[in-house]
Image 1 (cartoon, rainbow, N blue to C red):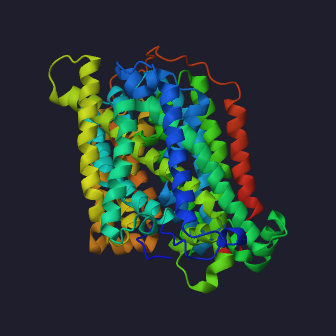
Image 2: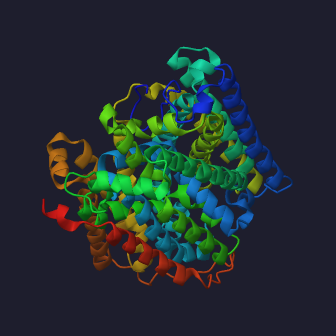
Length: 566
């Protein structure tokens, strides 16, 4: 197992395998099998995406940025899931499970609850407005200044932080899966990193810039199916490595050997203490799945509210089941390799290296490419959309622009941002705690933006200046709490998730005070743009309630509350 920055997937295929037949195969055959299966699977997704989107009109803003508002439930669900899944999750969450057990499933199962809120509360309001971006909704609710502030925050976060990190972690992980040193003969880690960053960046840019949201959604759905199959295979082979008597025998053996790993209630030493589920963890999940432009843009392209709700709730079902591939492998790795003195972040890579038959390595690499590309091209598409519609059209150009020019500006900006990200990404090599830094930077805008969206919907008399003040105060407060040495020690003492909850409460108070001081003379009227059929899906409410019940049942089924008293 090679040394790697946190969250990256470095695999060494010289490690043992449980498939004796593969061990006896000629060594020179393995790179050929790996590279062929990788190229075949990657090419197949590209061909099917082209076939599915060929002849589609991408000449209007709606068609390019919102897939012509034609996305159905299946494509929305697949795109939501794969945009969320990346190297960070597969490696990072399984690494957290290696250390803390199933308590870290909170990030997945609470996401299921957040998607219920999205389907039943937020999505009908977004589609009623006929918007393409969250800042556009905030302009409708507050004013143009609110839109400009949030657009700039999103663009800076995506372009300066998210895109380079996606490329860096994805390139490093893919280099390990394919064992590119052996396949190419190139021994320089730096050279391989630059090659993989530019390969992923160029392919992702082609999807996002030249295909628009429709090609992103189609390729996401195809890759999502592959990632689901690949993730299940890793779990299956891992369980057989624990006990060849079958899945249930393996689970029983692990639970008996490590009962503490099967407690859904995180203690004070856990990365997700139980109390934080009701503060920062819940708020971060709600922002991510209900107001994060990168994620929810595909829901704005829904053909109807019915299809949008269907897609969001199907995604919610899969998020509740996601611990099977995002948490359980980490516990399997703990059972198998805890005595080998490996780190949590290396757990998933070690498991894949040891249990996955080598002919499937290329397939799994292709699926990982899909996950990486999905995160990259979705963030890039959202960045181009925010700039062309929220910055250029509103602030820079004083002329009346037709759709062709809006799209052209979006493509040019997307190319520029993609090139910048590809240049910056390799420079991240050697950075310490890169994902800890990313989480802190995310907190800077997650909480302020979510607070102004939520209260803007719930209270129709809050003035624009109150929302704008909350955005600025929230950003500065969290930045000081994270990066000011005198304050950061207090944040650490109370846990940063509780700190985010406290800031959120403070922003709500600021906006409510603004309402008392100078409320809007007339309540905000949420007008129907008449662009989308708002007839709800008849099963939306029952499925939402069912998902909530399943989440509660999962927690109680694996709960041992005695850890809270320790």
